[in-house]
Image 1 (cartoon, rainbow, N blue to C red):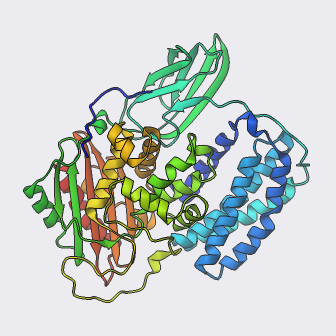
Image 2 (tube, rainbow, N blue to C red):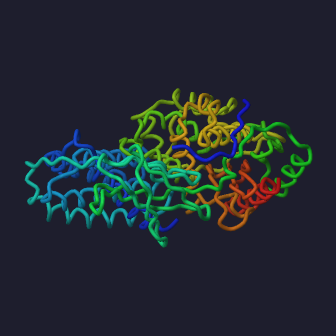
Length: 507
C-alpha cells in the first residue's frame, strides 16, 4: 500500500456521572433536530414508558450475575432508548415524560455496564438512578395523553460533526435565508463570516484537544438557524503528514525490543513514524490473545452501515461505547443487530489485519478470566483463544484509519471508510475513556496532554495497547502486546507501554 498525504488545507474524562450527563445532553440535542419526515408521535413515547415493566424484570434477573441476563438487560434498556428516539420530538406536555423515561433507560444501561466494566459502584449508581427516574415517570405519565404530533425544525449540516477529529477547517451548509454566520467557541470572541453559495467556512486554531462550538446563522439581525458541535478533536496540521512504513530500522527495532524487558513473559511491539515511514518491530508477527483490540474490525465493518448521518443511527451509542470504553455489551448487541462475525472479519481484512481473527461475541466481564497454565512457549503465547492478533496487524489497522481520515484515496478505497467515517472513528479513539482497566498503557511515555488515539484490550493474562500519538513533528504509531499466564497487572502493562511509547515518540 502506498499512501502519501500532503500537508494541505482541509476540505469541506470525567466521572461516569459527568459522561452520562454529556451523553444525555447530546441525545437531547439530536432529538431536537430530527427532520419533519419523522414527526413526533406522543403515542410512541407512552408505549416506550409502558415497556419499563419488562426492563424491571430483566434487571431483577440480571442481579444473579449471569452474562446472558446482563446482556438481556442492556439490550432491553437500549431498546427503550431507541423507541424514545424514534418517537421524538414530542408535544410540550409530553416532554417531562420523555426526559424521565430516557433517564430510566439510561440508568438501566449503566447498571448493566457496571457488571461488564466491572464496577460495583457503577452498578449501584445505575440502580439508584433507575429508582429515581421511575418515580419521575409515574409523576409525568398522566400528563402525556399520546395524541400529539409536531414537526421538528430542519438540521443544519456541519463538518466536523460532534466527536469527529478534524484539522482546523470548519464548513457548514447554511439555511436558505442566511447571509452571515457567527462561530462561537467558549472563551473566545465570536468570529463572523459571510455565507457564500449556501456555505460558510471558518478556521479554528489552537492547542490539540477537544472543542465544542456553535454556529449561528443570521439574515440581517434575524437569527434563521444554528448548529451545535460537541467534543470535536482538533489535531495539529502535521497529523496529515502520513506515509506507510518504508523500512524496518534495525536500531528502532532494538530499542523497541529493549522496551519490552523487563516486563511480562511474552511481549511484542511495533513503533512507526508516519511522517517518515521509519518503523521498528520486536516479535511483531507473534500471535497474542487479541482481547478487545480486534473490535477495530467491527468499527471498520460497522461504521459504513450507520448511514450518512451516523448520530441518527440506532447503533450509534453502541458503536461509540464499544470504541471509547470497549464495551462487550455494546459489541454483542452490534453483532446481533447490525453485523455478524463475517462483517467484522471483512473489516479486519480491509484494515490490513491479515493474521487477526474475530470468531464471535464476547463474554460479559472478561476481566474475571481464570489463571491459565504455562506451556513453555518461548516466543509466542499459548493459543488460549481463537481471537488473536499481532502487533503488526494492529499497526496496519491504525494506519488505515488515520490515512482514511486524512483523505488518502487509496486508504479510503481499501478500508471502505469515507474520510468523515474515519474521522469519527479517530475521534472516538482519541476519546478513549481513561477509567478502570481502560486507562492508557501509552500515555506515560509521552508529554502530558499529548493526544493519543488508542484501543486497549485486556484479559487477566494479557494487556495490550495500540495507539497513534500526535506529536508536533507528526503522528507516531505505538503498539505493545503483553502476556503472562500468571497475570499481567495494570501497573506492569503501563510500565511496558510507556517505554514502547517513548521509543515511538523519539523516532
